[in-house]
Image (cartoon, rainbow, N blue to C red):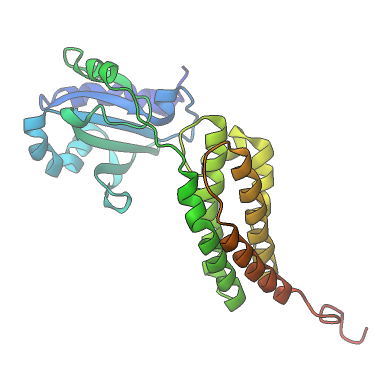
Length: 275
């Protein structure tokens, strides 16, 4: 695997500095570096395994520790994504996005994807990974179906009311929560929203473009109709077991169709004055 120069330099310089702290048992790379698919825009995702009985002493120090390992431009902790052990940073120059996740040794094996050990003490991390394989989340299509038609009605109501900032943001949420995972599931990949969608499945990514709209009621209505069509087709093609709620589907689609009709210009409205 060939790493971009800033990533290679960082991974050459920083792990040896981390190793000086005897509370840390080892460091592994996650994400695109672990999977062998990094590019110049990739983040560096690191998992730092800390001795169980030293973890509570390391956690409050983690930003100061990172600052001692690499030039720190900005940093904040990951409570907003439900992961307070995570520190999200920019380091450099050159600017590089690096995520440092501090875990106890007993929690190191719990993961959704592969890790690549960069260094370790006495082979301890490799032994844990060999004993505990990744446990990636599976797409729960029934969970989506139980919510999808409520979401369609909600989005249609936002469009009807003219809350277009809300509608545009909601369409992005649906892409992230529904269409992206369906495409990743089809490819047998980790469910990661719409990440790398254009490269992973160009044909379906092109279809998803129909769900993107500008600040316009009619465009938003057409985009939500496109969501419905793609969800119905791709969920049926997924091969996953689920029970479709036909009554909710019919009612939500009827409501959305009425909203879309209401956004169409009436005869003569789009004509030039005096024509």
